[in-house]
Length: 102
Length: 178
Image (cartoon, rainbow over all chains, first blue to last red; front, side):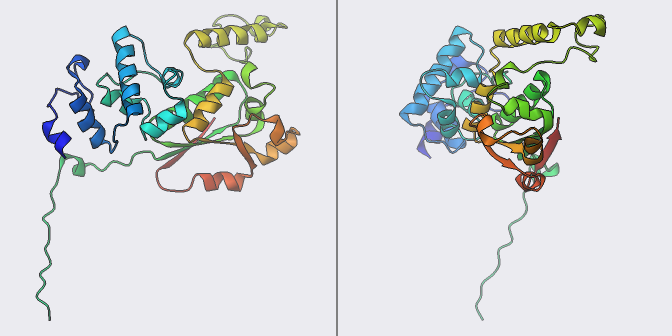
């Protein structure tokens, strides 16, 4: 896939989360999403940018907060990022794995 | 005779092949208690499973049914007596005074609000949104004279123990009883 070829190689931890969220690029997000069989739509990007904005603000993220973001509800978030509404979205957004139980 | 030669691929062993992993695929969580902490344990585990991409089914029975009722779901109590870890050192005689349990439960829910832990009814909505399923026990519902309309709308059905086991079908299912 083209996006994979042009994607920059960035330092990640064992689970594939970016070590430095500031290094994140949209190409990297596309490639990471493709690895999870996710094709990024405008709605995905909105969620990703929201997650990054919250990370920059230092907010501890939870599924509940993402569901109250005004962008998506929880059901839509599950549909956008199957198998990990918060975990996979955070990974693609280049932010650390959320340390939240809810 | 055709001259097809079967190609045998040499087996490539990778690091992951050496130790096979059998991830949990489904959780069936049975909640038989109506105390705040027990109900929350069940809810957090079910919701946590869904967030990890694990299927989750919940089955509420006996006093656990109280958590499903529209009337009490968001005002569940914690037990103050018979629990030495609850206000360590305070005798049960004191902890059993009228109003003590209500006060302790209110305080606990307030602390949970501070941590932005959802209320029980909101938790049910989150679980349903994540594809989780919530069921009530037929026998216990009959015993407590509870009907489907007494329960929160996320309760999918009132089912028998046999139906409950059918929910657990498939490899990689774990059952937890609370």
